[in-house]
Every structure is written in structure tokens, then in C-alpha cells.
Image (cartoon, rainbow, N blue to C red; front, side, top):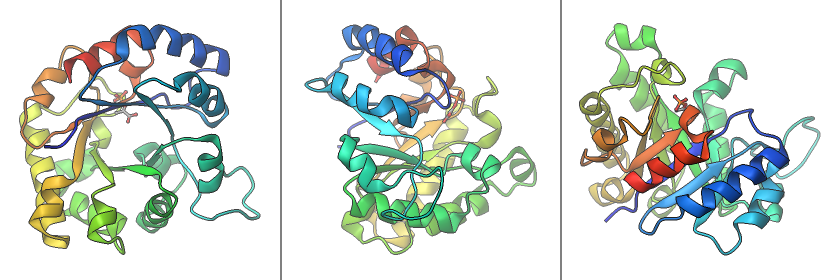
Length: 249
Ligand code: PEP
């Protein structure tokens, strides 16, 4: 049995005060059993959120990290810094990082390996662009991203990773994939993991759908046998709507 994950990605929204206000309101409605709930916030809000989340069922995550321990990498945050704050999750390879910050599959792999070796749960994003989808290349692109992201991890390590299939054209566009199409790609991702590792690892790994998930469509995704939850951007910014997504899971 895979525990579902509902993860919110706030992107570059919310000051520390706004984050704490949100958290107070969300905690009243958004605490649910049987689902892993995660809020991925901007770095500066993480210490306050981790403190606020103590004793709750809500996990806090970063949206990126560097793979190195420390060094001359101006503007970056390393894995031990996240450990020191007590952050358990980190989003890796989000399409906005791949597109605007030139993050490659190799960087995604280094970050994933570094996160695992620092006991952080990496939420690793993969997904095709509209151009790739229209050229019928979804499976080829997604397979390559998955295989490269997980390269070098042992079976035990891989089952700690959470994968998120996020078609780039569906992110922030209001135009989600159909639940059936998302299921088909996610089943394919699971098969890719089975080919790379084995069927047991593929059965154990959690794979989320992301891309314009909202209270009105989440049920259709959660009904799919291979979809283990959602990574949610826009609809996680409002505490009520994010609480409804958690409730649905
Ligand atoms: C995301 O940022 O990962 C995302 C899926 O965004 P949205 O839900 O707004 O499409």
C-alpha cells in the first residue's frame, strides 16, 4: 500500500508572515490521517514553517537545493542547511528550474543523490513540453528524465524518492492532462522504474501527477490506480483550496 502524497509548491509566493498566517488557517482544516501532506515554501519561510509545523502531520519542503555540502556557490542553499533547519522534503528538477535556470538531467541526478544521502525526501519532477507531446515524444522524454534522475541510486534509495509527472504544458496553464492520459504516462513511468530496478521497487515508489490540479478535478486523478497523489502549484496558495485537496486524498 502506497501512502498518498499531496504536496503544495508555493513557488516564489508568500513572505514569512504570509506563510505563517496561511499555516495557522491550513492546520485547522488540512490535517488528515493516511495522507502525507507537504508544503514547499521559499527558503526564507522554511525555519518559521518548520517551527509552526512541529507536532502536526504537515511536512515542510524546500523547492530546490544545491548538491554540494558547501562552497563558493553564491545564492545557493546546500542539503546540510536544510537538515539544520529540520526540513524533510525538497522538490528537485521542477520544470521552472529546468526552463529558467538551465537545470539539466545531470544536475537533477546529483541533487537527487545528495538529497537521499542527507535523509531528505526528494520530490523529483519530470514531464514533456507541448512541442514534445505534439511530436509524440512524451514516453521517450519522460523515460530519459526518469532514468537519468535515478541513476546510481540503490533499490532501497529509490523507494524513498517521490516522482512527480508534470507535463510542462499543464503547469500553471489551467489546462490539466485528463486523468486517463496522466494514468497512462504514470503507468509508463512505473514500468520504466521496473525496467531500471525491479517490479517490487516499481510497486513501492510513489508517483504523483502535477499540472493544474484543483478541488474540481483531484478526484479523477486519485481514482487512477498508479497515481499516488498530486504536486500542486496555484491551488496550494489558498489554505482552503489546498485543505480540500488533502481532504480528497
Ligand atoms: C507546480 O508548480 O508544480 C504545478 C503543478 O503548478 P500548477 O498546479 O499551478 O499547475
